[in-house]
Image (cartoon, rainbow, N blue to C red; front, side):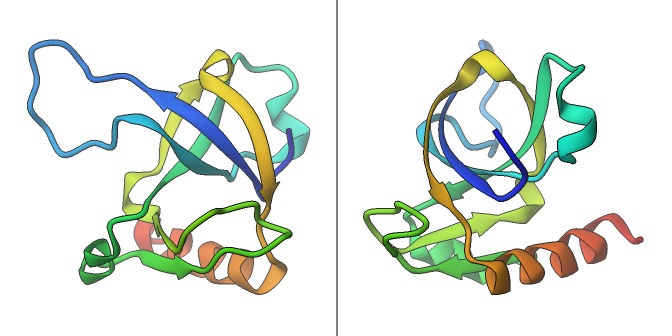
Length: 115
C-alpha cells in the first residue's frame, strides 16, 4: 500500500452517534507518507463518495473513472474527511490515482490544514 493508492475500505458506524462521517464500504485514497506507514498499524486515508452533490462542500475534488484508478463511477474525494483508520479496514486495492489529481489533493490538504 502506497500513497496515491485507491483502496476499498470498511468504515464502521460509531455506536450511539449520528454524525456526518462517511461509513460503510467505499473507495478511499491513501495519503499517508510511504516512509512512515510501515511502522504504524494505522494509515491516513481520504474517503470518497459517489454522491456528486458533495462537490458543494469545500475541499472536495471530482474524479472520473479510469482504468488506472479502478473506480466504476464518478466520485468525489472528500478531503475534509481526512482520517486515520486501522490497516485491517482496508479490503483491497482497486487502483492508483492519476498524478494531476494527486497534485490537486496535495493543494487541498494544505489549504485544509493551513500549511
